[in-house]
Length: 113
Image (cartoon, rainbow, N blue to C red; front, side, top):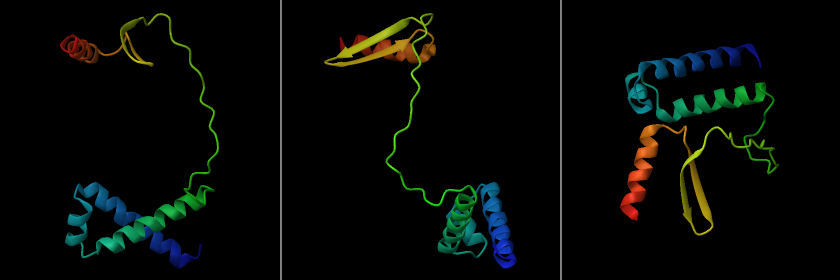
């Protein structure tokens, strides 16, 4: 990246950070700062693309590969407090779930039955 591009990127980064810190919506901030929304989004996209390239990622497209998901066996100390079955589907909520969730689900189930 040449020096001019680096200066622009630094300026654009400051602009995005300023907008974020202002608490205003993008539309409101752009109107207040005489920046068109299309300019704002263009600059934001350029910053993101530069960051992706720097991270070694040239594309955000899904590669279609597989990802290993580790299997975590259930903790036997957390007993099932609620089990909902419908056809081939079973939903189990452990006893260490927040009380308000358990109370809500139990109330819904008693109204259904």
